[in-house]
Length: 346
Ligand code: ADP
Ligand code: MG
Image (spheres, protein in one colour):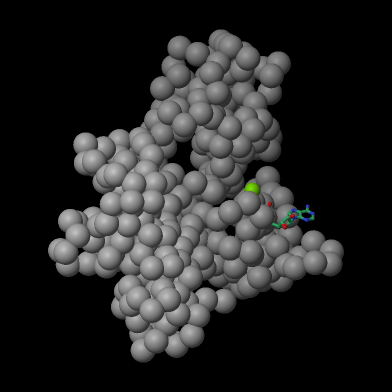
């Protein structure tokens, strides 16, 4: 298993802003790295450059320190899985998995017996051992993506590239496959780049998360790093739900109108700022207990919890509370903001 170095890679398509703007990243051997970012942030472009399907405008890609860009796609040792299962419809599952093995250069072509045994191993690995004779149309979406993965693994790739592989599947199947892929990775240990726009998927699956925005890397870190210590407002805003409040910063304290609502945990210049807080980091108390003076504005059921909207001065927060707690609209409450994060705006 290999290390992948992406060094100052840029890519422009004609005029307009660069799709990738000097992106550098070190992926360690056997690491599972998630590229997380909104649509259009350059995730697919970066993956295609590593695969050799696209040439960068400048920069280098190295596998174990050796230039990969000069190695033709077929020799680069890449397993690639796309969002839309690119299985061959007229081939059985077994034939699909064998496809990469059969297209090896003549000198490396395995025998039929070797191919059959390798396909059986791979189908067992993705837990589809009895499905070899079926056609893609006879499989569920999740099963098709497992076949696509088996096919990508057949050539014993140096690097596995997965571009939103579960993006077209429904939420429950996605969750299952996410766990399954993590377990598969722990057994096989391929260096893996996994693209997703789903922060939950990235946080649950990856050893490290690369948060991308507009062709740049915003932050690289463990799931705990990017979730608990976001480097920018963009990253915080992308890590799941949060209330975003426009504030005025004075001496490191966020003010909404005349009310001081939170102190910065890192240096923030005076002037307009943005305060971010997650609904589960807002707690409510009876009026008169410590906290800001707030008022319940609205509430709604939100999965296992109840989500409440609370006005504090000119600001509006969301808070998650137990569904058993009664929250009459207009009721005064004390509001405590745990782990609120203040950033300079703009
Ligand atoms: P993501 O996968 O994060 O959604 P992409 O890498 O697909 O982002 O796209 C990044 C940017 O590059 C987008 O603005 C997109 O329109 C542009 N882009 C990607 N591929 C091409 C292409 N073949 N021709 C022109 N522009 C492209
Ligand atoms: Mg994409």
